[in-house]
Image (cartoon, rainbow, N blue to C red; front, side, top):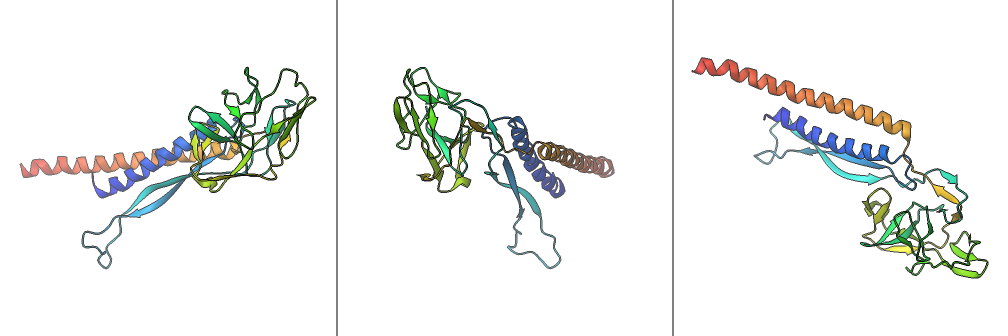
Length: 246
C-alpha cells in the first residue's frame, strides 16, 4: 500500500471510531442521565528518516484518534411524580454500589428494592453521604427529599443521599450507558440542589446527532472510494508494466 492509501486508511480508521461514538449517542437519546460523547482527532506527522524534512519536501500527515471526551451539560428535566426519582442541578453525581465497586451516575430513576434499600433499575443500591445504602421501612410510605439530599418519611429521618463531585470529570470512565467509574478523588457536594419527582434526560441533541451521522457516513464512503480508486490505479500500473518487463 502506498503513502496516499496509508494516509487515507488512517482517516478511515478514525472515521469508524467516530461513527461508533455517534451511534452510541443516537442509541441513548432517551436514556435518562446519558451524556453525549465526542471523538477528538489530531494530525500525526510522520518523522523523516533523516530527522528533518528537506526544503520543499512535503510532510506526511496521518489522522490520529486522540481521545473521546464527554459533554457534561445537563439534560432536560421532566416531572415523573415518582417520589424516588431524583435530579441534581449542579455537576454532581449519585453514587450506587455495584458488583465492581461504587459507580457514579446522573440517572436518577430510583425505587425501593426488595431488601428495603433504595436502588436503580439494575438493582444497585443508592448510597448516602457516608457511602452506605439507605434503608426504607415498610411503614415509610410518605417519602420527602429536600434540596440537600435529606430523606425522611412520616416516621422520621432516613438519611442523606450522597452527591459527589469528581476532581476531574473528564477522566470519568464510562461503563455502559449511565454508569461511570471515578479514577480520581471525589468530594461530597454541599449544595446539590436535589429535586424530587424529577428525572434528568439525555443531553444528546437529536437533530444535530442525526445530521452528524449522515455527514460521517458520507465522509466514510468518500474515503473508501478514494482508497479503492488508488488501489485500482496501482493495479492498473502493475498490469501494464509486467508484460513489458517480461
